[in-house]
Amino acid sequence: MKLDILVFGAHPDDVELGCGATIAKEVASGKKVGIIDLTRGELGTRGSAELRAKEAATSAKILGVSVRENLAFADGFFTNDKEHQLKIIEKIRKYQPEIVLCNAVDDRHIDHPKGSKLVSDACFLSGLLKIETKIEGLVQEKWRPKQVYHYIQWKNIEPHFVIDVTGFIDKKVASVLAYGSQFFDPNSKEPQTPISSKNFTDSVTYRARDLGRLIGVEHAEGFTSERYVAVQNLSKLI
Image (cartoon, rainbow, N blue to C red; front, side, top):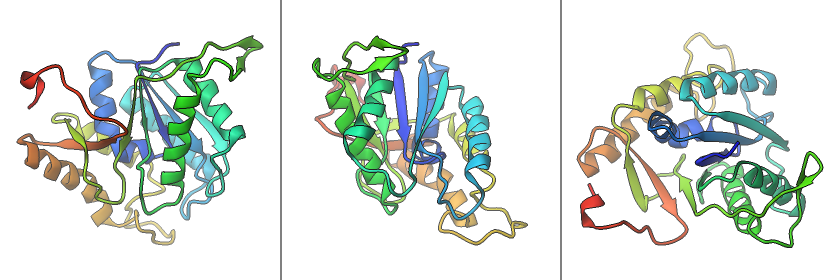
């Protein structure tokens, strides 16, 4: 299956928090979108890897993505090396996305920038003919995405561009709240974490609203780019 957009996250729930509304908007426009989680989130303070897997499947249905996979890298300990790069290259070549979205380039959780660089490097290497990978015994064709963009997570990194996601924030919130084990629940007996507060849950909406305010729309999501962002002409700007 060829995808238009392939979204990577270090942990289940990263992509929902970072760009859930953008994913929902692209799916609604007819684009084929897939999600690949690098780890199972097994080091998370709340819940379990098994529960996170069920929550991720529920969230994928809410967003309407075509596929969701998990590479089961070691949470907290995966590295940017040949072994991990090749596994990501296999997925890039399998789905041949035009656009790849991945973790923030700088963030509070160490896996976020690690995952960001790992996926970015794999996107480049995937276009090299002499790197051989196979799927079901068949040699894969080389493939390099046209664009690699990074969504924004905990830190308020200044975006290089923002996407108007007005009308899709409710779907983003629903996809985030599918991870009931991770976020605010006044009845939970689990330990508190930086993302389990009501303030954090509320931030999903108010951060999107603030970005929207800055560009004159209701809600927006921000991204950084590894190259200059180009537009067809001035009329394409909003």
